[in-house]
Structures are given as C-alpha cells and as structure tokens.
Image (cartoon, rainbow, N blue to C red):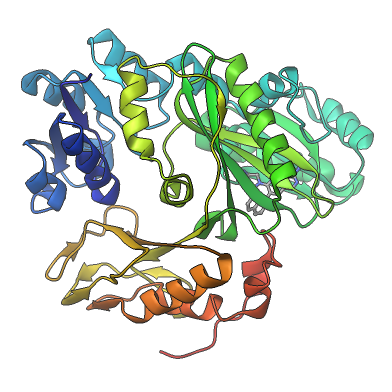
Length: 448
Ligand code: MV4
C-alpha cells in the first residue's frame, strides 16, 4: 500500500481524499496557498506545506513547489483531485521522474484523451459509437466543409484541444460554415496554442450521461453505471444524479460495455469517466473521456456502495481485479452549492460565512470544507458544498433533497440553494423530462 500521500488540491476534494487516506492508514500531506492557511485540509492532514501565494498559477498549478513539498515530506504518491493539475500529462510525467506515484492514468493516456479528436478515433477503433463526422482533425476549411456536407448540416465545429465547450461552434448551413470554422480555430489557437478542428453532425436536444470507470492498468475495467448530468448552465453542472431517469438496465449495460471496451483498449489505470450524448431515440455517442475523479463522483459512490477514492489509491498501489459491472441500488442526487447569486446571473459571492448549518439525517451527505466563520477566498472556484442524498427511488430522493435544502443555513454570502429549491419544484424536472438545453429556458422566480 501507499505510505504517505500528498494532496495537490484544496477545498472539499482535498478533505475528501484526506478522509479516505486516514481510514486506510495512509499518512497525508496537505499543500496550501497563503489564502488557504486556515483551511480544514491544513488542519486535518498529518503535515502541511505552504506552496505559494493565492493565485493558483503560483501555488496549486506550480509544479516545482508541489514536487519540492513531496520531496521534503517524503511522500510516495500525489493525488491531484479534480481541476488544477489533475489532467496535466506533464505533471504526471514529472511525478514519475521524481519517483512519485501519480494517482491517475499514465501520462500518455492523459494526453491522448486530452486531444479530443485523438480520443474520438481511439474510442471508435475500440468499437464505441461516435457522432458521424470527420476522421480526426481536418487539414483546412475546405476539408472541414467536405466533412460537414458528408455528415449533413447542422454540424458542430470542435477544437481538438478543447473540451467542456471551449473552441466549439454550431453551424446551421454552408453559408455560415467558414466564418464559424475560422472563429473556433482562432479561439482554440489563442487558448491552447493548437487550432486543429474536427467536425461532427449536430445532435439535437441531447442529454449528457456519463459512465464511471475504474481500470487496473493491466486491461481490466469495472463500470459503475451512469450519472445524469444534463442540468448544466454554461457548461457548469449544477445537479447530478444516478441512475439517469432515461437509462434502463439494457441501455446501462450497452453504454457500460462500450465505455469498458474503450478503456480496456488503452489499459486504463485509475478512475475515469466516459461522457456520452444520448439523443431522443436513446442512441448514444462518445463525447469525451475525463481522466480524473470528478466532482459528482459521490452519487455513484452512494448507489454502488463504493469508496471510489479508496479504489484510486488501491489501483495506484498496484492492486488488480477482474473486469465487470457494478449493480446500482436506489437513487442519489447531488446539488452543487456555490457561493454565487442565482438572482444576479450566478455572480460569484465570496466573503465570510457568518452562520452555517449543514443538513443532516439518514441518507444525507454534505461534502464541504466550509464552516461558520470561514472566509471564502475570491481566487478559486465557488463550490462551497456538495449536498448528496440517497433513497430508494427518485421520487423519495427528490423529497429528501428538498427537506435537506430547507435545513441548509448559509449566512453572509449568497448561494445556489434557492436555485435548487425552485428546480426541484419544476414539473419537467420531477418527470425526468429534460436535456442539456433545459436550464436555458428555466425561469428563476424572483425572491431576493
Ligand atoms: C455536442 C452537442 C451536440 N452535437 N456535439 C458541449 C461540451 C462538449 N463536451 C461537447 N458539447 C456538446 N457537443 C454534437 N455533435 C452538444 C454539446 C453541448 C452540451 C453537451 C453536454 C452538456 C451540455 C451541453 C451544452 C451545450 C452543448
């Protein structure tokens, strides 16, 4: 087993990793910026090392400081959490160069999945359904237009180096294609230093459904069923659930087998997620693969009764297993509680939390690093808590979440709690009748 793990992250995910390490008898090292000096990860880890000032470029993203912290504390592994360096192949390689185990997939896997056109070709070769379009990146506008004509308009113009909606345009017809192609390519060139583009047919009113995987690095992969993640605003997820209201056991096994085939083909190591678009006919298409643990992993933990962080640590220590599928029991929902004002276009609302009480009770879990008196720094993302419930059915899980949201007290900053309260009352949400466009049409009633 691993002896000492350094957590190269902050906030709730740093705490989440520390908790499992402590339960497994693994020593922990927190790293922190000066803005996080008084945070809970610093208090709860066995050791803590300051790695720089508040801006992440000089702390949580600064590879030399993190490697130095691992060396001075004698850590043997680094858990990157999500965000920051979690999908940075150079960081994974630098860890290996310093005899530190990076808790995640191999650097080559991170880079090939980070290139969205390479990822798509890899998955297609493994037999995973993909959206019709160009074979990988196109050489120029003319080749892009030819691929768009073949696929049929409307089409999506996507940056190979993009992901999460960056460098992406939808073109309705030939007339607007060239302009949008050039815009997407320039945006990708400026943001990623890589302007390569690939083309896909546009999938109408899709749902975002993703499969949780765990690979042992020798070609064995387990799938843990799906998460429904269509409730998003500007590519930021706000609520996730497992299982998806549109996925039955047959579709689950087909999506799970497809995701496993893709991951087995690259001898995937660690936790990963294959994102699919699911259309009106419930046909599914590979979208992207995330090579990290995700924010929403707890809903899968709840319905499969699994500690996914624990499995990341075991795989990193060399444990292997047989390929297979985990059964899902009951229903779990996660609401992301952000320090944002939903009545002011979700503007960030950092500051001091003057009063705090987190919901409790059977089937209620609140993953958070905040407490009464905590000051939310303005430098990082606005997630302050993940409220997760588990019950027998979707209906009961919704009722439990409503009860839990009603007992959530956060004073001093604005939060997304009232947004979730209104969403959970919406008839279409309650019926499971929504897609990725749902929040664009959702009208929040004024109350503040
Ligand atoms: C698509 C699509 C429709 N057709 N691709 C958005 C982020 C990136 N991961 C891919 N995305 C999409 N790709 C085709 N061929 C629609 C989206 C999309 C979306 C996907 C998942 C969740 C929310 C979304 C919001 C807008 C667009």
